Length: 387
Image (cartoon, rainbow, N blue to C red; front, side, top):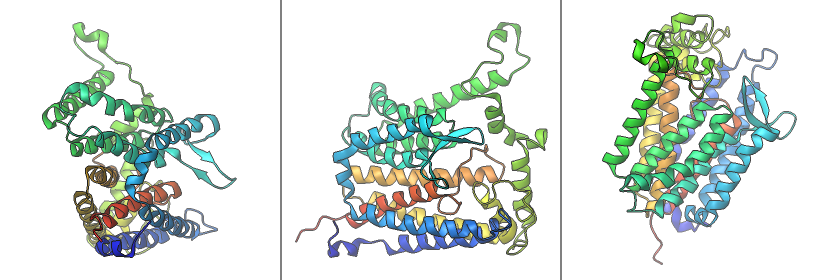
């Protein structure tokens, strides 16, 4: 548990900007969710306030535990993670074409794939810390890859491509921090990206030369509608009433905000419900429409300071294990922010990744706050007490 002397290490600037972001979430939700349930305009604000309050409790509890103690139970946590992900297929409920949630009560569900992010950060950090200095050869990369491949496969099967990509980003970031040979590991990543690119090109090709006809329309382990959602951002006008609709509405919303925005609760795309999922995945579009360029830049500034302090906490850890845990949390936040803003701006595929600490969602908020708790646990123990 905590000693009072450890509080001298607390990064108050990190906590301050965290609270500003949580406050921004409630402010934006008070307009973004106003007309989602017309009979209960503040339903999502009240629910988010509860998720934030309970999330703070989770962060405090996690921060009070020495992050190194999680190493003793690493394989148990890994097993629990796999069990929860597998339970989705046995007991989970389906919605919007995906089976991701396990019902706890009639009105409350949990999403194990969200918690899997933190579980993987904790367990992969221990796995990699034990291999310090032993990630120089290509074959050295195989055990860590297999370690994350199993939970990633279960998540991809749901299907939940967004979370699968988040875990992939966490894995890549933590591998580099663990000391993986940058040339060899980087070369593998580049090669993998090229293979994926060629596979997509072959899948969508319709007029290849005769000697390549046998690979035309190459089958991929995804349904056509899923692939279309991933590629429609390159030309959303090709399907204005279908998969391109989300992107078009989002771009219109952000662009119409101008410099100062249309004003609080004065947006049209969000308030009239033209913009889908505007209280969850597309909440950044509401910020752009109602608060304009100034509002989005202010939010990005809050995120920037928050992330810089988080990076500082990770880099000042007293050991490699703490640095790996901290860097994993940072990678999770950075990837979420970049992809969410990218997809709402129309420059990245729509993958259903929420904006951390801002978008509505219980499992998402709890996962974010558990990550914050891990950072604070590292921060509070960055120096060993000598007396």
